[in-house]
Structures are given as C-alpha cells and as structure tokens.
Amino acid sequence: MSDSEETLLEFPCRFPIKAMGRASDDFQTLVVDIVERHAPGVEATAISTRPSNGGKWLAVTVTIEAHSKAQLDAIYAELTAHERVVWAL
Image (cartoon, rainbow, N blue to C red):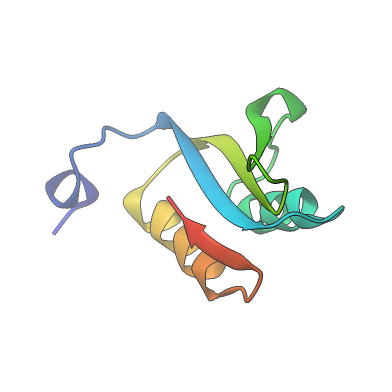
C-alpha cells in the first residue's frame, strides 16, 4: 500500500509535531533533536513552546516539511518511546 493510500495527507506538506513533557531547561532541545534526526534543517521560526498554566509542563511544537507517512511514523515512534515525553500529537 502506498503512502497516499494510508493517509489523507498529500506529501510533501507542512506538518506540526507537538510533544509535551515536564518543563525543564533542555526539554525543547530534546524534542527538536529527535525531530531533526528524521527531518533535518528545522528552522528556529518553526519551533514554538507553550508552558502549562502552573509551569509544570511544556508543550513544544516543531513544524516540519513532511515527505512521507513513514517519516512521520518514525518521528512519533521515537518521541513516544522517550521517557521524558508524556505525549506527542
């Protein structure tokens, strides 16, 4: 089955990857490093963060140029496997 049959997305496309974990000085770097292993060349303008109201959690969004469903699957697999990532969307 081809990528186009497995997803409604048309590749390449801009795609936001969001991950949340405990707020720390290096959580954003951790998420960006994981995403960049699969989508090199992420620009600083493509990264945003949002702390929770109490400041305990941090959501990091990295918008990439996605080229395939397999690429997105690999990013999500690595993010969700990391012990510091609570969830990824």
